[in-house]
Length: 467
Image (spheres, rainbow, N blue to C red):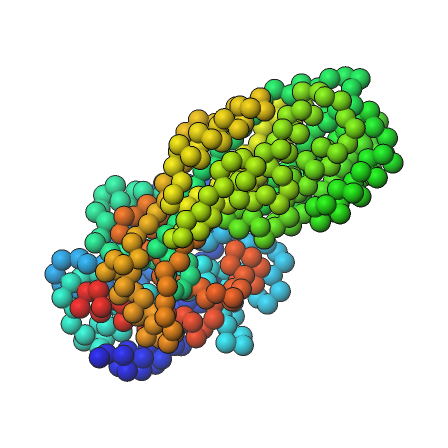
C-alpha cells in the first residue's frame, strides 16, 4: 500500500544517508578505557552523542542511558517494536588499501570505512526507515523504539545495563546479521581444561606447546619443541604429517631441541570446517613421533584422540549431533599451551537445539577425565530460538520477500547476535549471502544499494508490525 511512496522517499534521501554514515564512520568508536560517565571510553560515547543528535534532528524522543545506549522513540500507543543496532566497532590495522579506516569513501557503488557494514550502515538504514514513515505521515497504531548500543563487539554489557532498567519489547530485530532472517542461534559450550605435565629430563619429550589466542577462532599457527630426537627424524615425520593435514610444518634446531612451527588456516569457530586447525595438525605429528610416554606426551596424544584432525563435529568425543531445524554441532579446539609444567587448553562448541548439558557438557567432562584432564565447571549457554511460525518472523519475511522477490526461509547460525538474550528478538539483515563485505577486516564496506534497500525493507516491516 505504501511501497511506492516509501521507495521514492528513501531514494531521495540516498545522499543524506551517505552523509550521516560518513560522519558516524569518522568517529573511532573502538572500545577504550572507561572514563567517568563514559563506560566504554571516549569513542563509543562520541558515537552515541552523534546518533542522539541525528535522532533529535528527526524529532524522535531521545534518551541517553548513561552512555551505555541511546534510544529514540517514535509513534503513539503501546510500544510494539524495538530495533536494536550498535555503534561500536572492532579495532583497525594499518594495512587498509582503499581508504583510511575512519575516513569513509564512496567508490564503485560501495561506501568503505570501519563500521560501514557492522553496524553503523545498518543503523543509519533503521533511522531513515523511521524518518520515511514520519515524513510521509504514515499513521501507526503502536509505537517503536530505536536502540543504539556501544559495546556489542566486547560482550554486550551495554544491553545488560539497558535491560536492567527497561522491559524487552514484544518484538525486536537487529540489522546486524544476514538476510533473510536469523531466528536460531545455537547453544555454546566453551570451556578450558588442564592437567599437570611436568617436564621429565632425559626423556624423548614435548617440552613446550603454544597455539591460539582466541577460543572462537580456528588457530592458524602453532609451535612446539621436542627433546631427545634428531632434526632429520622430526623433519621426515613432519613431511608425512603435512600430507595428512594440509598444514605446513617447519622444523629447526634450537638450543639442543627441535622447534616445530605449524601453519594452518584461520576460520570462525562456528564454521571450523572452513579452516585448517594448526593445533590438531601439530597433535597429529606428535602422535606419530617416537617419543617416550611422558606425562606431557600422553596428555597431548590423549587430546589428539579426542580431537582428530578434521573432526569438527565432535565425532571422536561422542557428542556429534544434529537436528533438522538448527543443523549440526561444531567443535573447535582453539587454544593449547604447555608452559611451566601445566598443559592447558580451551574448546568452543556450537550446538543445535537438541543439545543438553546431559548429552554434551557431561559427556565432554567424562572425555577429558578419561585422559587425565579436568574440564572447567559450568553449563552451556542455551540456544536462542524464536519459532519460525511466529508472527514476528512471518511479517519480517514478508517484507524481505517484497523486495528480494524470492521466498525467505529463517536461518540457524552458530554465532551469536545482539539479540541472543532476548526472548522475542531476531536478526534481520543486512548481509547478503555470498557477498564479502570484509566485516572486521581491512577495507570493510557497505553496498550502497543494499543499505538503501534495507531502509525500505525496515520501513515496510515497521508498518506491518506497528501499523
